[in-house]
Length: 275
Image 1: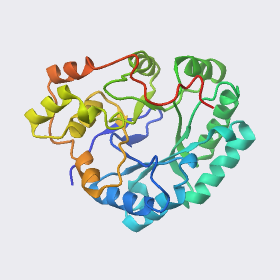
Image 2: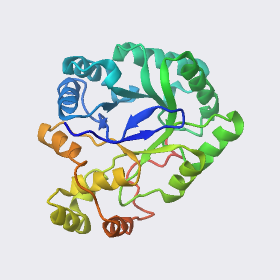
Image 3: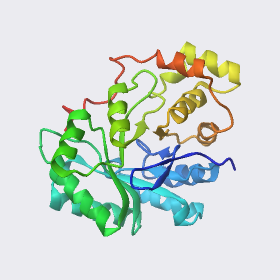
């Protein structure tokens, strides 16, 4: 099996650069999909309370038969459980559904700024990390203003920020903020929900390498130092997405893909408005 690369988080924890995303994977389909992913070489599995598939993810992990210490499991707190007491309760519920005593990474799924509770929630996350039940804690979909407030009011830097990031929405200012403060960047929808696979520039680069557009796009994430979590329930596609560690994009090809950035490229919700 190809040995994949890792990113070291600011607390010293290593996270695989390529993980298996489970958004929109039904609970009944999750066991098989997760088992296939682990068999293909993935060692990082990403789920969330709102996905409704933590039980299925757990079943897939157990079916794969890989020792727990070789896996990196991420889950997330949903928006209706912000606030210290609710966050601690939500974490306990996720652990129960996952049938785990510890997760490797726990994330605030969205800042939901209108509720004005994400700073209080973040303090609860620091408590969870101190307890040892989450090796690392971080956030998801936080923008610069949200991160500045967390740092300013708590002094506690998230290990990672999982955000929408793909060739047509590259989040350069946010990435610069991450780099300045030692926050790792993790990409959800790294293929832009399939749009990257239809891009002629990426298709041309893929043809030169004898790879698929999806593989080229994921390689772009890897070479930029991001963590990426592509999702699929198709066994062949799961295997294909993991086969990105034995080729390299040139500096010129990386620069070409960088030109695809578009300030209107967002396909998910606006974190300032989403509740």
